[in-house]
Amino acid sequence: MSPIVANDGRRGGIEASFLIGAVLTCSNVVAAGMILVVDNNATKRLKRGEALQSMTDALLEYEDEDMEEIDLTASRRRGGDGEDNPQDGGETNQNKKSGVHITDVQKFTPIFWLLTLSCLMVYGCILPFNNVSSGILLERNFFTPSPTDCGLEDPDECSAGYLHQEKNNAFDAHGDICSIAPTQAPVLPSSVNHSVADADAKRSDDWEHDEYVYSSLTSKHVDCGDPFWVDGCTSDYCSKQNAATEHAGKIMSIPFLVAALLSPLLGHLVDRIGRRAQIIVLSSSLLVIVHLTMALSTLSPIAPLIGQGIAYSLFSAVIWPSVSLTVPKQNTGTAFGVVTSMQNMGMSLFPLAIAAIFNSSGGRYIPYVEVFFAACAASGVVVGLVMNCLDSRYGNKLNAVTAKQLEVTEHFIKAGNNEEVSDLEDEDDMYYSPIHPSEEGEFT
Image 1 (cartoon, rainbow, N blue to C red):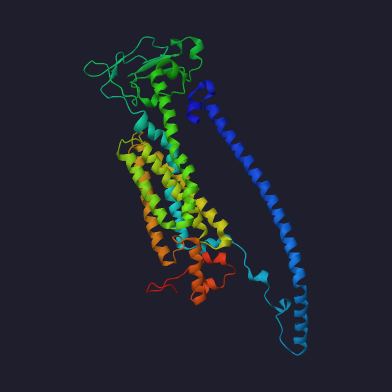
Image 2 (cartoon, helix red, strand yellow):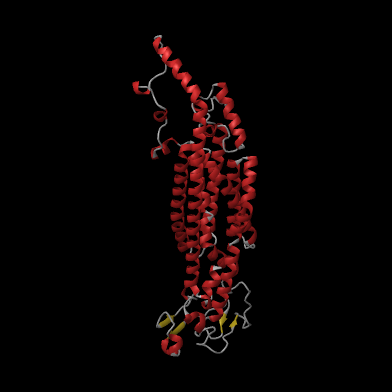
């Protein structure tokens, strides 16, 4: 939608596309407010239910408590020790539970930090790619350079527009009409020398500059947002570029459309089969293939972008649930905060790296920017393989199905071989305590 609105001045142009973004952002704010209201109402209902349950439990246990008090009094009269009095130095339940501190991140397992690194590298070749994918698609498929042996009949005049009413055809080196493919850019003038005096005041008032003097004109000089170029001098070039931009915008939506359709199904599949760490390797490997295909071939981008959507869906379906399986339950929020912080740090640094590669490559994305994305994905593969090795040594927390994880941990608790897990208070906490392998490969 954004390229279509931005390229059409009758729809409001760039300002209208920003307005659409503002409306969508306001919609998100309204949705967040509605969630807050629903959450508060649910919390109140839960508290009322807990209060009623507490009253019921108190009434049912009242008689038992009286009997216990009588037994305790009798025991003290006989000189028995009785139970420890909290006021005499006994430890209360509140003191047994320690608070949550930011320094708890120091105790997070190596698998958690590998998940964080994997998130950084894999999302680094998905989200930043979307920021430059329009330029990549234009350069690679939809608006490629015009034939190098072609030139305008009058190379020092505008190619099309009100500044050059006559047709300025392009010819090749043999004097024949130049054959330009539908995905190639029209031929630009070799030079341009115009000022506001060359057009009537009504038209030149919209120009962004008073003079346009270029002795060696290139595509970098042509700004199709400037009325001088889009209407006066290179209307054929800008018209084709705008159409290509809109087409690229539609193709850009493929990965996220695929993710929207597949994510619920793949999430359900992960719940059934587990194999989270293995899927991280699979999704990273798929991204390597996608970006190498984009870098080294001229094939249609549709298949690679479908592959990117599948990889994105797979990775998203496993990375966030995996985080909660590698840290204690009380530190889940801290863990998600750390992962998100590292991810955003990467999102701020990757565009700088991409811009540096783009500039050092002469203002081109292909092939080196795509090679950079492929290298990030390859790093994700390496991190995933190490993660699988550690996961197999620590009880297959990530690769096992959740229900089976609980059964495995309970086995070690019953066997008395896992001292760290034996002190946990409920079954949910059993997921997070590491199971240490012995030298012979057996878990102890």
